[in-house]
Length: 589
Picture 1 (tube, rainbow, N blue to C red):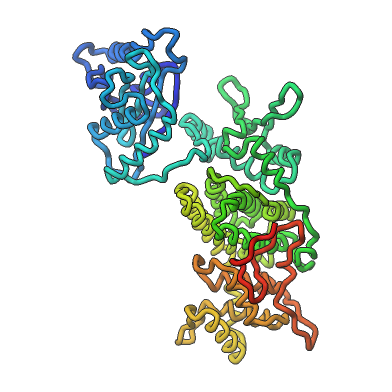
Picture 2 (picture 1 turned 30 degrees about the horizontal axis):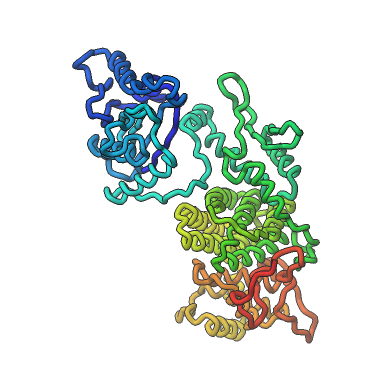
C-alpha cells in the first residue's frame, strides 16, 4: 500500500479532477467512500438534493473550505492536503467500507483529524478506481488553528505498513527518506504521450549518475554531462561561485516551449552539487601504468582494467563483511563501478548490467555516514574502466567481463547482508535485485569461456586430471565429483589448476589462497568463483583461447601475482598472503 502526499491551494480544482473522467478516461464511477462527518455531499452519486453534479460539487467545495474562509489571512496559502493511497496489483480488491477505514486511519495518524477530536480538519476520500483512493483535506481545524502535521509522510507510511500486516496485504519495505524522488503522474503521462520509454526524470538521473562515475574533477563531471547530450545550466551566488546545477533533455519542453529543468538534488539526494563535491573530495587515485597493476601488456586496456577492478572489488567484499559502518563509503564506489561496467560492456550483457546499476543506486544511500571514507581505489577502478573504453564481447575482453561480474555478484550479496544487519529493508531488497541482474549478465558473459574451459578439463590427460581432482576434493570436500565419469562443474577448475601449474604456480597453495578470500558460502556456483579468482591471481588468460605464459625451464614461480600487489595510492585487493586469513587483518588505507 503506497501513499503519496502533495499540497495545493485549489480545493475546487482538485475535486473537478477527482470526479472527472481522468486524463485517459480511466476514472470509473467516482464517489465518496468517507468524509469528516459521514454526511458530506457526493457529486458522484448524491442526486437527491440537486440532479446537477456541478452544483453538488460546489456545495462540497464550500463545505470543505468553510474553515479556510473563516481563518482568512491565517489560513495557509497551500491549504489543500492531497494523499493518494494505492494497493499492490496482487492485493485483493478492497470494499468501499475498507477504504473508508484506511482513510480514517491515515487522517488520524498524520494529524489531519485525530480520533475523538471534534476540531479535526475536514476531509473526504474519493474512489474512482478499484485499486486506490484520493484523500482531500483542508488544513484548517475547527478552532481555526493549523493541524500539527510534522513528518506526515513517514506517519502515513508507517500506518500503511500496519494496515498491510493486519489485513494480509502485500507488505512493502519501509523507507528511510533516502530514496530518489519518483516521477509524478504528469511526468509518466508525458512520457507515454511523447513516446519516451521512461519519464525524463529517470533518464536524467541515470545520465548524471553515469557522468559522476569515476570523475576526477568537477569540470570533468560537467564535461561528461554535456558530452552525453544533456543541457546544463549552472546556478551561481552573487560572488560568482557555483551553488548548483540544473539539467534538461534536448527537446523536452513545457507548454510555453521552455526547457524543463531538473536540479540535481531533485533527481536523487546524492546528486546535488555539494554532495558530488564531497565525493570528488575523497579523491580518485591516479591511474598507474598497466604494468604497475600487474597486467600483461598483450591484453587490451578494457581487459586489464576489468582484471584490476575485480581485485579491488574483492577488497570491498571484505570491508562490507567486517560490519564496519565505514563500509558505507564503499557502497557509493561500488555503484560507480557498476555504472562504469554497464556503460562499457558488450551489447549482450549491457541491458542486464544497466538494470543492475539502476537497482543498486538505491543501495548506495542510507543514513549511515562513514567517518573515514576512502573510496580512491574503487573510484579509480571505475575511472579506469571508462577511460579504457568499450569491451568486445569475445576473447579476453569477454572473459574478463565475466571475471569482474562474478566478483560483483558477491559484492552485491555482501551489500545485502550489510544493509539487512542495519534494518535497511529497501536497500537490502535493491541489493538482492542487483544480484539477480548480475547473475543473468554473468551467465551471458561466461557461457563461451566456461564451455571452453570445461572442454579443456575433459581433454586433460587422465593422470593429470585425477591429480587436480584430488586437490579439489581435499580443499572442497563438499564439492564431490560424480561417480559416473560424466563432465562435472569441476572440469573448468581442474583445467585452470593445470594451466596455473604449467605457468609455474603451486596449484594447492594457489587454490587455498583463492578459498581464503571468503564469501564462497554466498556463491551460486563455488567452482565458477574459484575459476575466475585463480585465473586472476595466476595471471592466466580469462579466455582459454589466449596464450598462456610459460616459465623458464627448471624454475618455479611463487603463487603471488603482481595483479594483487597494490601501490600506496590504491587500496589493497582482497587477496591474502599464503597462510594468512584476510578476515584477521585490518584494511590498509
